[in-house]
Image (cartoon, rainbow, N blue to C red; front, side):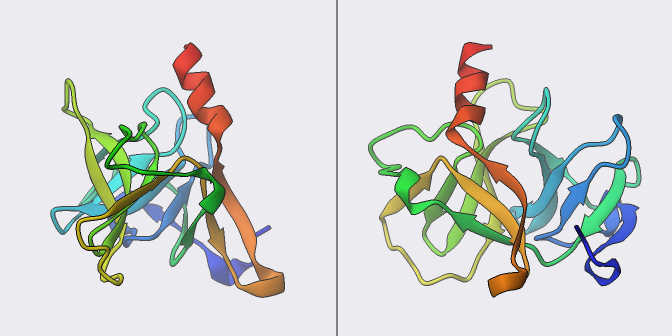
Length: 161
């Protein structure tokens, strides 16, 4: 459950990076706002277009509950060497000074890029690590709640589709 001070209702264009957008209807979608090339962008977290992103600046078409200031946690037991293994769409990637999500641009026919969700972290230099499982949370300690979770089952379902 969310307390009234933990969310607002608005458009995607009004959501800052590290905001989770939760749908109010079946026509809306769960999204996370990050940035690509320093411009705000939103990535779909589920559905037909899961892990596709698009610019979110001035976007008044998408709406929902906005939960600002969420945190992303990675499951360290799902780590892989992103330099040795191709990261699947939706994987969290720790690279240089960022934590990013591997996603496809809405206009991309092939390939993918990284949507930054955290930056200004301690530099990892040339090393990289990927994580197949991660989650979006709010709160700390006993008040911490998981709002969304990516699991290996998500990847298995996409592979079999």
